[in-house]
Length: 577
Image (tube, rainbow, N blue to C red; front, side):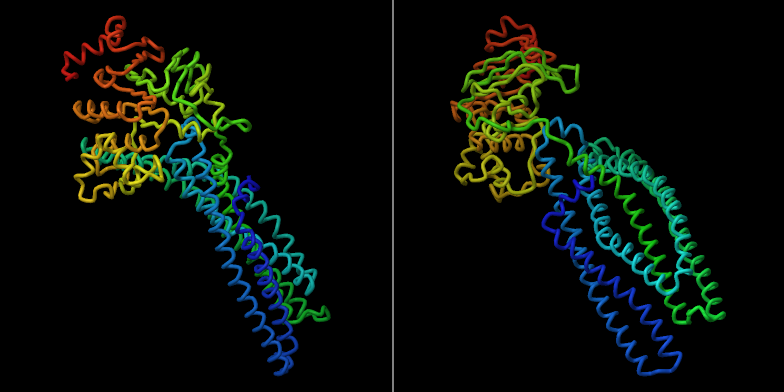
């Protein structure tokens, strides 16, 4: 896991290496200072040698200045390295998510991915910053201070060896109890983000049904759960500071007791300055142990985040281009389904033994009840999902043999949930073709019956679209999405119930203009209204994942019960005009 995460360091390796080196320089200077202070006390202050005092004072001041330089350099390098690591990690995660198939995306909730890209990465950034600074400083300080303390008095230095096992056992108990709580906290963060996203996305529904109090109650419940778990985790971690302080003070008391006895007894070579230096080394050693404990605490907190991030990085897309011999050209828009079955969950097929032959350039309508798998059927064409059994061919080639980008560039799909992004209308439309000219954009909008309302906006095609397209109506959003798809000039155009929000007049006008646009383009239109598909060359009737009938409008009226019932219900109910 650590090896995988460290791949995101990349171009910040230099700063990641420089920071520990500067830290080592800082530590060396700090370890030398107590020895210089001991010499100053023993050979300068005690005998009253002012020359020696000035000499050692200058040396101590020099060490402080050098230590300050190394500390500033280390802080700068560590900051650059940690923020760069976080930037690369977010990029790697986001790129991985972009490569996911629909099946991969279904595995993670949106709120969970947002938490992993934000909160979890921030926690790892803090851990990495601490690691390249404190994780180097603490062991280096511990080692160098131990060496210097033993050099002053080996027997007194053995006191430290008794303190280390106490700290190790205490830290192990703290970490083992805290980690499961942090794992639970991050899962609850996912739930909190989901509640917030759903509430903000559906704020109009919330207000329409006067559910503000209920939504607030739901938010408070999750928020209180996070607070309770966080308090519990902090209570466990709170034992760390008292444990460290108790060990520090006991060691200081023992060193003072035995050190003072040795000085009074004489003959041991122990002087007042040595005891002063030893106490400073005691503080350095035990402070380094405290810093190590902080590292363990941070690692415990960040371990859950690291595991969640690696889940995203480890997830392999279920749909990939062929490694060798990928087809890079789609000859035409002919579509064939051969004995195709598909299931979202093993053993629960939603499409059953589908066989279809759609000629290139055909105008095809697809109709069926809610849950009849109309959307699932068309999503198999650009390989948004992979077929379970059988095969789908486009232009005479199995879709699994195409280079994925080539296939999807040849298929334009207007999904059931129309999505517009923050930006101008032009910027949104150029998702279909980033090099499209203003004239091409207008032509596509005319074909999609969108130019009539765009031209009424004060800013025209430069009108800014708010997040989610909240400042345009549902019908306007659908027509903009159709125009965006037309700009791709695809061989296959799929409209997944994408005229449901427009009136019947506009729907008829839209069908007429689409029929004139790119006559060689294969068009598949999923619709609920018979009027939207009755002029198609071929109409497919789906029922619970099975093909119930195929034919023209007149043929299906004569020999298909489902189609005739839908038609009659819409005519009698005034659904047809």
